[in-house]
Image 1 (tube, rainbow, N blue to C red):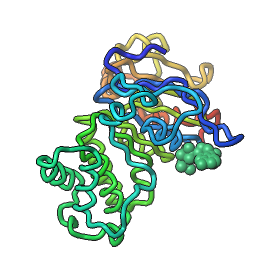
Image 2: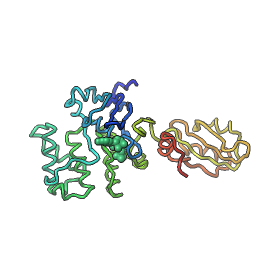
Image 3: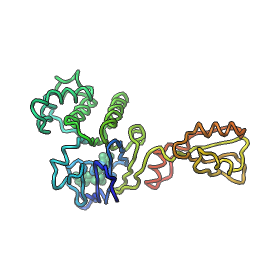
Image 4: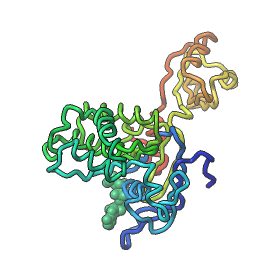
Length: 310
Ligand code: ATP
């Protein structure tokens, strides 16, 4: 694989064994600034193992991680300087107060003493922790503990943020807040978010990697190509549909039965609205135009080789 020139992260042939268990089998990809990547896979697929290796807290059995060109194995301090990592269970000291903890993290990150107060205030604000900054970590709710872990991961303003199941165990309000935070982070850093929930990845990410049994089964953008189900009362020749600029491909559901039902994929940059306008304008009697299935479901079930659930 050739990494793009501006790759912030490069993972090459990552493999990891736990005794006889092969948890990761040759995972490789590159990530550029500004990308929000979802790492999707069922329980046990290898997501946490992969993220732990990318974050430099777990050694690969084979393979290489480069962050901003710095090799994680050879120059771990240089590689880790540019990344923030939120593990599945963030290590928090229950007897510390939130702001004390963040000051501690800032010192560990070697932020100069004169800049620590500003860094802590910024992280507290970004993660919505200002009102609980004097509370003991051990007394915080799961949602606030998660935010404290995130604030620690962001204290040194990393360019790459790695979040392992950041919304797991949170209530719907907290999930919405964390998603908003991921969107905000995506404006200024590259982000990798792992999840076993399709909706989570759909909500936060523009690119998805599917892991299954330690293998990378898919790596591609989300939302493209977009498959639509189109039903027409007065269906034209299929060729007429194909000629529409908004249409990339057309398949008839049952070519001989004249059902007027088609599977249509949108051309790059086109919208469903353009197809609807064209169908109405041509007098084809538009009855239905709807997504076939969400992109993420199609990608996931195709990647792991399973039929889509009904
Ligand atoms: P989950 O969504 O459940 O967190 P995951 O996709 O993050 O799963 P990993 O935690 O990376 O998957 O685990 C991948 C495989 O490696 C699993 O089969 C798991 O049981 C195994 N595994 C993980 N950590 C260890 C360990 N320390 N010792 C032995 N096996 C392990």
